[in-house]
Picture 1: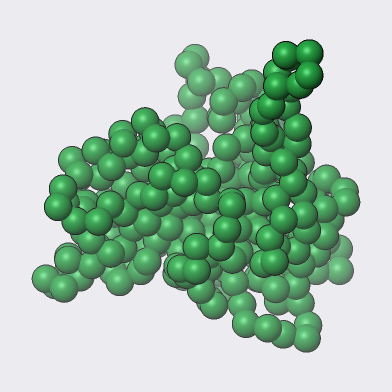
Picture 2 (picture 1 turned 60 degrees about the horizontal axis):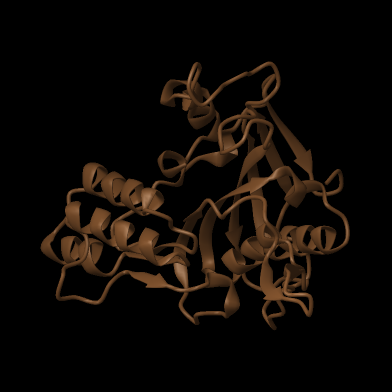
Length: 273
C-alpha cells in the first residue's frame, strides 16, 4: 500500500487505528529510503510527519516503543501516538495522507449490567456533525472519519471488509457521498484468509479528498481483482510481496492516466457504480 501511495518528505501522515504502528513505520522507511533528506526534512520526519491513534493502552505503548526503536520521536518529546477512541470526535487536525487498517468485525458497542445482574451489550451509534450517516457499523464510521482527517487533495488508503462496499442504508449513503466528494479511483480486492479469520473478505479502498463541487469527483473506479482463483492461508501459503507486484505495476503510481485494462484490472464509470 505504501509502495503505491508514495509518501514524500514533508507529508503529514496519519493512522487513526494504528495498532503497533505498522503503517507509520512503513511510510517512514519508504521516505527515508527513497528521498535524500536535508536536516529540516529529517527533523520533520522524526518529530512531525507521523501521527496515530490507538484505543488500547498496552498496544499504544508497544507502538511508541516501536517508533522510538526506529528513531521516530524522542522520550522527552510529545508522543506522536494518542491513546484515545479516534471515532469519538473530529480532532481538528488535517493530514495529507491517511493509511489505516481499522478493526474488523465488531460493531461499536457499550457493555452494561442489567437488572438481573447479567452483562449485556448495546450498539453504540456514532453521531457526529461531520459524518454523512449515523451508524453503529465501525468500518463505515472509520471511512467517514478518514474523509474528515484528510486535507483538501489529501490521499487515503483504507482496508475495508466487503460489507462497506455492499451494505444498504447507511452504507449506501456513505458510498454515494464518498463518490461525490472524493475521487474514489482504485479498489484492490484481496483474497480471503489474508486478515484475521478465514473467510473475511478484505479490500483496500484508495481515494483522494477534493474541494466542494456541484458534480461528483469520481469519474471512474478501477477495480483490481486479486481474489478470483487465488487462495492464500496465514501459515501454509501466505500472501507475499511478489504476489502484489502486478498490482503495483497496474496501479501506475504518479501516472494513473496511463492505466490499461486487463483480466484482473477493470474500470467502472460513475454511472455504473
